[in-house]
Length: 105
Image (cartoon, rainbow, N blue to C red; front, side):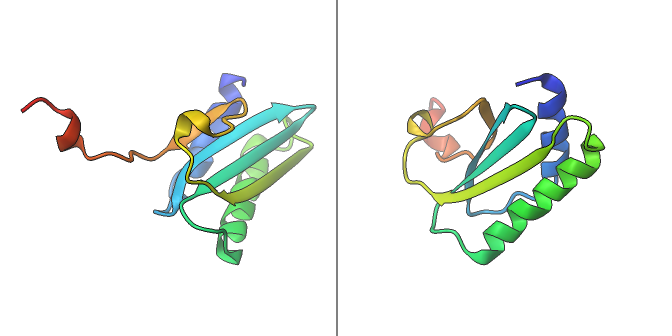
């Protein structure tokens, strides 16, 4: 994925991350950006709305020059990050461990 696309997505994610989101993966192909929200619960209509807002913000930020279409998917996943489909890459992964468990005592 082009760095320019990653920066646009990251900027548009500011203020849009909420606790149920475990990870967000993106893929860019044929002028279409695909965004997948991996949630720690089954998706609700508000998750779909959140992803739709992100898609709108990405279109606005890019001036519709990079993308002809932004599609999104929200899905429950209890897989580890390494087993999820990361597509072209994760643009967000939440920390799912307690820092005290990994630091030497």
